[in-house]
Image (cartoon, rainbow, N blue to C red):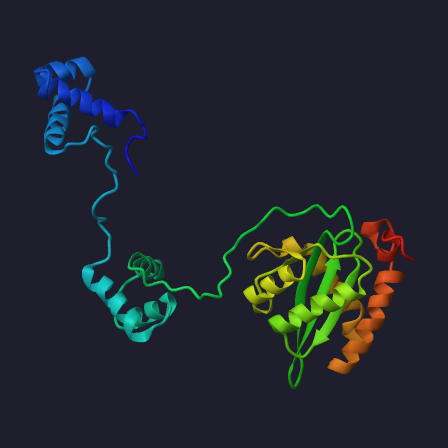
Length: 291
């Protein structure tokens, strides 16, 4: 960063240098006239003679070297390990410490970045957060997530969904999750829901990849992500996840068949009969005026 950000100073330097070079003023006279130090005027005169620019630009005040900068040996070793092992900064840092080099992880990451050795997957989704719509009507904002259940022999996942306006909810247990199953879940929920979905909000889970994003847009839905490491952005759905676990799944045999049956029964109770304090003791279907 430069010492000054005054946009007119480069032109002023050139004008003061020209008073000496072209108008024949004495450098001491220019110093008294401008208020700048005599040595500063001489330096500007020298720079003006060495350049044909119409201004004398402001140079960065960034130092050329840092007293604690990495030695060239360590920098070369970081680059060597990158090409040799093709691993991330954390692994390269581990190897360096193992081999007796004293270097921090941040220094390894910075060295890789400065040498353009940081690679990103073409499937990586960059974090973009468009304006969150206000759920004034059913379907304007739908939150989607997954619950993970560890079974004795395998795993079980539960897709969950909630409408922020009415608190209408839907859930579907699955043995596996993927982008294709995620798309199937959204389509099933839209078929069952008594209203049209508009914007879907979800996290950066692998089951919601770029392929999934493209497909739901093709199906007429808008899309946005919750912020990274901010589960409160999906707070309504997080609360529903806890509710369905406490009131339904906690006393159900832990297998897919039992979950399919009990979740279906619970969703009918949740949407048609269970009063919600946040809805002034109404049910989601009463909020939709469809009961």
